[in-house]
Image 1 (cartoon, each protein chain N blue to C red):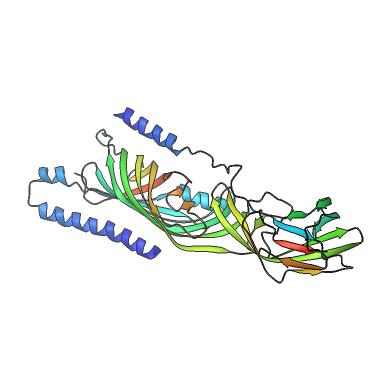
Image 2 (image 1 turned 120 degrees about the vertical axis):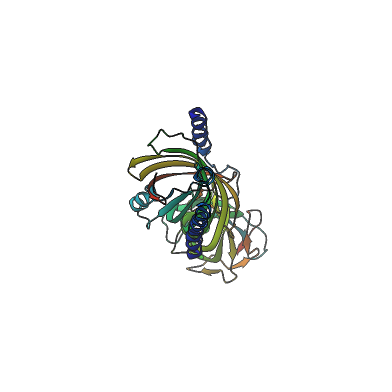
Length: 153
Length: 240
């Protein structure tokens, strides 16, 4: 009689154990914005050398001694505006990107990722100005395959 | 919705009491032996869960409570139910949210313990059908991001998300024991294994916790819980 109860109680304890949910390495993740650099004359993708790229309100540098045709930068997930300072030896220009951050629920272990929609009024605040023009070519960021913004210089 | 469940709970206990009382009145002309064998309505037990109010106040949540009750039907069979109110901050892996709502469980307990004369303890098995209505309010969460240059914490400064009118239904297997500590006062402990039947799925979120059911895991529908109860037994008939 009592034995049966013991087994039942024990099995309740065992079933009550649960495995930890772990977010798998390759799971969906928040993507960065891809910015390409174009020569203003030829409109061809042209490599550029920057001293550094950083956020306007954060002193630490995202990319130091950057050179290449395109750069990937993180956007703020908890704001509708992200501002970057591009330092190009002679001049520093500020790029202001207005965007919507759309948080997509994945699961308990991974939580949310963020997708972005870039607004068209994205603007540059020229200081002395090495940036001539910017164009938004792909306003949604659901992956990192395509270039979202071109900087013409 | 909460009120509806309270009414349901009270009505179900009350109506079953009535039914049983009227039945005993009808049977009063019959021989007492038959009456004792089939229906044996001696007591109504009402009580409280001791753990939930203490846990909720120590966690800084609003008062959580659970009322328990059962009514003896035959010598070993009891009609049993619980009603509870939960308002709780859930600190999950990536998301902190508040879950608040009520739950109602209705079912039976079957006592398997043979008492010595004069004692009234029980070891029982039970079955319940349970339902809960609740709402979730997301307090904050960390967005999964390969880049941690900016803070990935999203809190109420950016947005507040609330989901109301969520529901869940489940069945429970209960195993418990009850010991008479003073005259008509019982201390009890029970363990519950829950199997989720259905639950609402909020947009762009998931049901991670159901009041009364507790944690809902990603890939299985089992849950568990326990009760520490203090109950008072109301004798419905004078003991012979």
